[in-house]
Length: 255
Image (cartoon, rainbow, N blue to C red):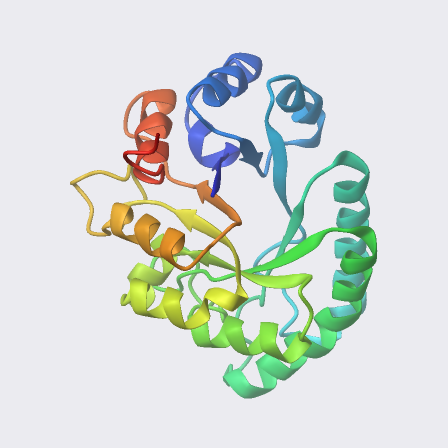
């Protein structure tokens, strides 16, 4: 597994020297960085980091709204082209917030219809799209893709390896728990994993409730080969917190 970190969460509320943080994160074991502002991409690459993800559109308005399909498709295609030109591997997309009564079945159908042509563009460009699962309980009230089953139905419906789930353990612990069974059941659909301590979105330590070493072991057992992105807000200094998180996903006792 390759490990990355989310720029927004490791810089939230901090004054940072971007070049120093990127260099020190690489020295701590990170291999990539996510959601990094595009002007910093050359700096990250100079530090030896891959550019892993960028956000494709605003998360409140998404592909569950058929009236937005044309505008969203144009925006996401532009971001796919930016990613392809800059060596970024994946673009994150969203269902959007519930509309009206917000029934899931028509929203899933709308997401499939709206995403299919965009996924074809991504596949041709050599870029992967990731549909993120978000909690609607705390951070994103009203968000529709707030359960694994919703995202899985969209990915299966589109039927392309260029669209996969971004399985965020923090969000799904808040919404449904049972992370290990869910990961096992959907491993063929998961193309990216995000970490954070639940419930507070802090460090992966003993002050939160997810057993991240067990999740890491399961992912290895299942042959997971994609990115694990650390998307928590460190309590203290970011680089030691990142180093500690990375260590939980490293194979122990390797020669």
